[in-house]
Image (cartoon, rainbow over the protein chains, first blue to last red):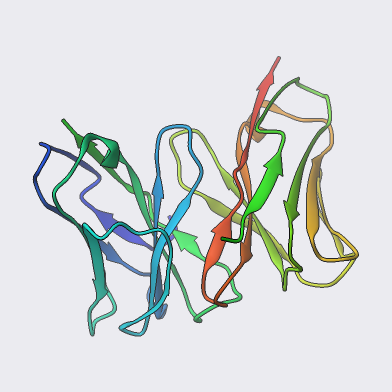
Length: 113
Length: 111
Protein backbone atom coordinates (compact mmCIF):
# COMPACT_ATOMS: atom_id res chain seq x y z
CA UNK A 1 0.00 0.00 0.00
CA UNK A 2 1.64 3.22 -1.22
CA UNK A 3 -0.60 5.47 0.85
CA UNK A 4 -1.99 7.20 -2.24
CA UNK A 5 -5.74 6.71 -2.57
CA UNK A 6 -7.62 6.98 -5.84
CA UNK A 7 -11.35 6.80 -6.45
CA UNK A 8 -13.18 5.39 -8.22
CA UNK A 9 -11.24 2.23 -9.03
CA UNK A 10 -13.35 1.51 -12.09
CA UNK A 11 -15.65 3.72 -14.11
CA UNK A 12 -17.65 3.07 -17.27
CA UNK A 13 -19.22 6.01 -19.02
CA UNK A 14 -20.55 7.02 -22.41
CA UNK A 15 -18.94 9.22 -25.02
CA UNK A 16 -19.58 12.90 -24.52
CA UNK A 17 -19.89 12.57 -20.77
CA UNK A 18 -17.78 14.13 -18.03
CA UNK A 19 -16.09 12.35 -15.12
CA UNK A 20 -14.04 13.36 -12.12
CA UNK A 21 -11.24 11.24 -10.73
CA UNK A 22 -10.13 11.86 -7.18
CA UNK A 23 -6.76 11.42 -5.51
CA UNK A 24 -5.63 11.70 -1.90
CA UNK A 25 -1.84 11.90 -1.62
CA UNK A 26 0.26 10.25 1.04
CA UNK A 27 0.18 11.98 4.37
CA UNK A 28 2.67 14.83 4.29
CA UNK A 29 3.15 14.87 0.52
CA UNK A 30 2.63 18.25 -1.09
CA UNK A 31 3.05 17.29 -4.73
CA UNK A 32 0.51 15.42 -6.85
CA UNK A 33 1.05 14.07 -10.36
CA UNK A 34 -1.42 12.67 -12.87
CA UNK A 35 -0.43 10.10 -15.50
CA UNK A 36 -2.40 8.35 -18.23
CA UNK A 37 -1.61 4.76 -19.25
CA UNK A 38 -3.44 3.32 -22.23
CA UNK A 39 -3.46 -0.40 -22.99
CA UNK A 40 0.08 -1.60 -23.59
CA UNK A 41 1.29 1.98 -23.50
CA UNK A 42 3.70 3.80 -21.32
CA UNK A 43 3.00 6.38 -18.69
CA UNK A 44 2.06 9.72 -20.18
CA UNK A 45 2.57 12.66 -17.88
CA UNK A 46 -0.47 14.90 -17.71
CA UNK A 47 0.02 17.49 -15.00
CA UNK A 48 1.61 18.18 -11.62
CA UNK A 49 0.57 20.32 -8.68
CA UNK A 50 2.58 21.39 -5.69
CA UNK A 51 0.90 22.77 -2.60
CA UNK A 52 -2.12 23.86 -4.58
CA UNK A 53 -0.34 25.39 -7.55
CA UNK A 54 0.21 23.97 -11.01
CA UNK A 55 3.93 23.20 -11.46
CA UNK A 56 4.31 21.28 -14.69
CA UNK A 57 2.13 20.38 -17.61
CA UNK A 58 2.46 17.54 -20.08
CA UNK A 59 0.42 16.69 -23.14
CA UNK A 60 -2.86 17.20 -21.35
CA UNK A 61 -5.85 17.72 -23.60
CA UNK A 62 -7.87 20.90 -23.32
CA UNK A 63 -10.87 18.74 -22.45
CA UNK A 64 -9.01 17.68 -19.31
CA UNK A 65 -8.40 19.84 -16.28
CA UNK A 66 -7.15 19.31 -12.78
CA UNK A 67 -6.79 21.09 -9.49
CA UNK A 68 -5.31 20.56 -6.06
CA UNK A 69 -7.34 21.69 -3.09
CA UNK A 70 -6.19 23.26 0.20
CA UNK A 71 -6.36 19.87 1.91
CA UNK A 72 -3.95 18.68 -0.84
CA UNK A 73 -6.27 16.20 -2.47
CA UNK A 74 -6.53 16.51 -6.23
CA UNK A 75 -9.16 15.98 -8.87
CA UNK A 76 -8.77 15.27 -12.57
CA UNK A 77 -11.75 16.30 -14.66
CA UNK A 78 -12.25 14.67 -18.05
CA UNK A 79 -14.98 16.11 -20.26
CA UNK A 80 -16.51 15.45 -23.68
CA UNK A 81 -15.14 11.95 -23.36
CA UNK A 82 -14.09 10.02 -26.43
CA UNK A 83 -13.44 6.32 -26.89
CA UNK A 84 -9.72 7.02 -27.01
CA UNK A 85 -9.80 8.40 -23.49
CA UNK A 86 -10.28 4.89 -22.16
CA UNK A 87 -7.20 4.27 -20.04
CA UNK A 88 -5.81 3.76 -16.59
CA UNK A 89 -5.29 7.09 -14.85
CA UNK A 90 -2.69 7.12 -12.13
CA UNK A 91 -2.19 9.67 -9.44
CA UNK A 92 1.15 9.86 -7.68
CA UNK A 93 2.50 11.98 -4.87
CA UNK A 94 5.81 13.09 -3.44
CA UNK A 95 7.03 15.24 -0.61
CA UNK A 96 8.91 17.78 -2.63
CA UNK A 97 8.32 19.55 -5.89
CA UNK A 98 10.92 17.56 -7.81
CA UNK A 99 13.92 15.27 -7.63
CA UNK A 100 12.59 12.63 -5.34
CA UNK A 101 10.63 9.40 -5.41
CA UNK A 102 7.00 9.50 -6.39
CA UNK A 103 4.48 7.04 -5.01
CA UNK A 104 1.66 5.81 -7.21
CA UNK A 105 -1.91 5.02 -6.34
CA UNK A 106 -3.59 1.93 -7.72
CA UNK A 107 -5.16 3.88 -10.53
CA UNK A 108 -8.64 4.55 -11.85
CA UNK A 109 -9.74 2.45 -14.79
CA UNK A 110 -11.86 4.52 -17.16
CA UNK A 111 -13.79 2.83 -19.94
CA UNK A 112 -15.62 5.03 -22.42
CA UNK A 113 -18.28 3.23 -24.43
CA UNK B 1 9.69 17.38 -26.41
CA UNK B 2 12.24 15.53 -24.35
CA UNK B 3 11.89 11.78 -24.62
CA UNK B 4 13.43 8.97 -22.70
CA UNK B 5 13.70 5.85 -24.83
CA UNK B 6 13.99 2.31 -23.60
CA UNK B 7 15.04 -0.84 -25.36
CA UNK B 8 13.97 -3.50 -25.84
CA UNK B 9 10.24 -2.95 -25.78
CA UNK B 10 9.66 -6.57 -24.80
CA UNK B 11 11.80 -9.50 -23.76
CA UNK B 12 10.88 -13.08 -23.05
CA UNK B 13 13.43 -15.16 -21.15
CA UNK B 14 13.54 -18.51 -19.47
CA UNK B 15 13.90 -18.58 -15.74
CA UNK B 16 17.57 -18.40 -14.81
CA UNK B 17 18.60 -16.31 -17.82
CA UNK B 18 19.85 -12.77 -17.42
CA UNK B 19 17.96 -9.68 -18.58
CA UNK B 20 19.00 -6.12 -19.34
CA UNK B 21 16.99 -3.05 -20.26
CA UNK B 22 18.55 0.18 -21.48
CA UNK B 23 17.37 3.74 -21.09
CA UNK B 24 18.64 6.55 -23.34
CA UNK B 25 18.20 10.29 -23.36
CA UNK B 26 19.39 12.87 -25.88
CA UNK B 27 20.17 15.31 -23.09
CA UNK B 28 22.09 15.12 -19.85
CA UNK B 29 19.97 14.02 -16.92
CA UNK B 30 20.27 15.27 -13.36
CA UNK B 31 19.23 11.88 -12.06
CA UNK B 32 17.38 8.78 -13.17
CA UNK B 33 14.88 6.61 -11.40
CA UNK B 34 13.72 3.05 -12.07
CA UNK B 35 10.23 1.69 -11.43
CA UNK B 36 8.63 -1.73 -11.77
CA UNK B 37 5.01 -2.30 -12.67
CA UNK B 38 3.64 -5.79 -12.15
CA UNK B 39 0.83 -6.91 -14.47
CA UNK B 40 -2.37 -5.26 -13.28
CA UNK B 41 -0.49 -3.19 -10.74
CA UNK B 42 0.91 0.28 -10.33
CA UNK B 43 4.50 1.45 -10.78
CA UNK B 44 6.67 0.97 -7.72
CA UNK B 45 9.91 2.84 -7.14
CA UNK B 46 13.05 0.70 -7.24
CA UNK B 47 16.01 3.08 -7.11
CA UNK B 48 17.42 6.49 -7.96
CA UNK B 49 20.85 7.16 -9.48
CA UNK B 50 22.42 10.59 -9.26
CA UNK B 51 26.16 10.47 -9.87
CA UNK B 52 27.95 9.97 -13.17
CA UNK B 53 29.01 6.33 -13.53
CA UNK B 54 27.09 5.30 -10.44
CA UNK B 55 26.37 1.60 -9.93
CA UNK B 56 23.90 0.32 -7.37
CA UNK B 57 22.85 -3.22 -6.57
CA UNK B 58 19.71 -4.66 -5.06
CA UNK B 59 20.12 -8.42 -4.70
CA UNK B 60 19.98 -9.72 -8.30
CA UNK B 61 19.34 -6.25 -9.79
CA UNK B 62 22.20 -4.00 -10.89
CA UNK B 63 21.56 -0.40 -11.92
CA UNK B 64 24.05 1.78 -13.78
CA UNK B 65 24.11 5.46 -14.70
CA UNK B 66 26.28 6.34 -17.67
CA UNK B 67 29.37 8.50 -17.40
CA UNK B 68 27.74 11.20 -19.52
CA UNK B 69 24.50 10.89 -17.53
CA UNK B 70 22.54 10.31 -20.72
CA UNK B 71 21.89 6.61 -20.35
CA UNK B 72 21.19 3.99 -17.75
CA UNK B 73 20.70 0.26 -17.54
CA UNK B 74 19.02 -2.28 -15.33
CA UNK B 75 20.44 -5.79 -15.32
CA UNK B 76 18.75 -8.74 -13.64
CA UNK B 77 20.87 -11.81 -12.97
CA UNK B 78 19.25 -15.24 -13.05
CA UNK B 79 15.67 -14.08 -13.59
CA UNK B 80 12.82 -15.56 -11.61
CA UNK B 81 9.10 -15.62 -12.39
CA UNK B 82 8.63 -12.95 -9.74
CA UNK B 83 10.61 -10.55 -11.97
CA UNK B 84 7.76 -10.47 -14.50
CA UNK B 85 6.50 -6.97 -15.18
CA UNK B 86 7.31 -3.76 -16.99
CA UNK B 87 10.41 -1.83 -16.01
CA UNK B 88 10.41 1.91 -16.52
CA UNK B 89 13.17 4.43 -16.21
CA UNK B 90 12.14 7.97 -15.38
CA UNK B 91 13.90 11.30 -15.45
CA UNK B 92 13.13 14.90 -14.73
CA UNK B 93 12.93 16.67 -18.07
CA UNK B 94 12.01 20.14 -19.20
CA UNK B 95 10.88 21.90 -16.05
CA UNK B 96 12.46 20.35 -13.00
CA UNK B 97 9.11 19.11 -11.81
CA UNK B 98 8.14 17.07 -14.82
CA UNK B 99 9.02 13.41 -14.29
CA UNK B 100 9.04 11.74 -17.71
CA UNK B 101 8.85 7.99 -17.90
CA UNK B 102 10.61 5.91 -20.50
CA UNK B 103 8.68 3.76 -22.90
CA UNK B 104 9.16 0.73 -20.66
CA UNK B 105 10.45 -2.80 -21.18
CA UNK B 106 8.02 -5.64 -20.58
CA UNK B 107 9.73 -8.74 -19.19
CA UNK B 108 8.17 -12.15 -19.43
CA UNK B 109 9.81 -15.06 -17.61
CA UNK B 110 8.81 -18.65 -18.19
CA UNK B 111 9.88 -21.86 -16.50
